[in-house]
Image (tube, one colour):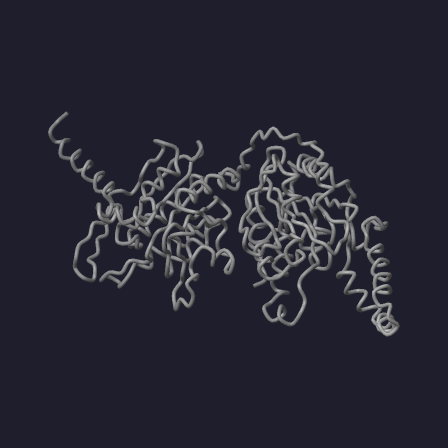
Length: 515
């Protein structure tokens, strides 16, 4: 080897060593003392051993800082490239908090934007690991160049629905940068070190933390105990997702009999319809091996969303949970439903709706915050779904909940109902109060109010029962009543029968969803 090559190899090795050293030993120690993995350790934990190929390691910050003190900026504070997760190609970037507190430099924004575009062109998922103080300040232009940041955000938005986009928030993320994790399809947040905040005053200690964004804002899908747990949850989630919108989600031989009849399902629903039950008990009995990967488990808990497998195929489940607020629909559950059903449709993942809801919540309070508008979004989104869809009505399908959960003529592939199913424009209790208020007033004076009330209620409930739905074209309709024990096999048979269906939409440039 000629001596002329020695100098280049020395420069190459120097660059490699600078990248490994990141912000220096003292900064690496602080990172670990905080209980956080380093940027490169996070990538190593995520990707299959030896599969990572880095890109952009030579990039450095070229602008002088405010105080004139030069600081090391290896890879411009973001480690990125491509590799494999369980043998599947992915693109990944990891913000390095040891370099300028993980702040987004001008060149870093361009780097990540290009990585996202590469992921879209190569049709593979992109996984981002955030640990950043926000946009980097400097003399030139005052801050991160807006061209780079704008290109990054636009690229990230344009590939929505093309490739899966997962974000891990393992440290702080503030300012304009805070929008990036929320733009992802799925956001996983470290409950110990994650912090998400746009700006302004922080009035409570919980603000910006993982629990805050799960329970209050609904912007987090999963909460992790630490960095390693967040990365493990990412791998679990990725196993349910396809590489892109043109490929199917991976099939797995779960060894669970598709025709398995679940006897225990009969014991879940109480005999008295006034009592509740936990929908998780139904879900776990009908999915493969009882494995359900729930999303946003502590946000709008009266609606349950998540992934499972049925006969090895990935399925998305959206279910009302009567154990929480009687499974009502309000603005948070509407938003939760809307986001997940659109993701399923974008990636052609079948949707299974389990229905037991007393409809949209009424009243002045809810009208003021736009309950109609939020419900209209659900109607609009479901009307545009072209993926496989199966609806199972377990008990109540009242009012608008009937339509948005895929009943009636919203065009699901099949609508099944348990014998306990009831269809009504509103709950029978409300109908009794509205129609028989005079009779109830007299009964109250006579001292037999409850007896009269129950009599009218039982008559109406019998009228609303699916077992009395004799008109095929009536407003209240299922295609077939089923034995609850056959729920699993009926869903699987429908998915098998509709695997190659082609459902189109009117030709248009794009649709306009209600605000």
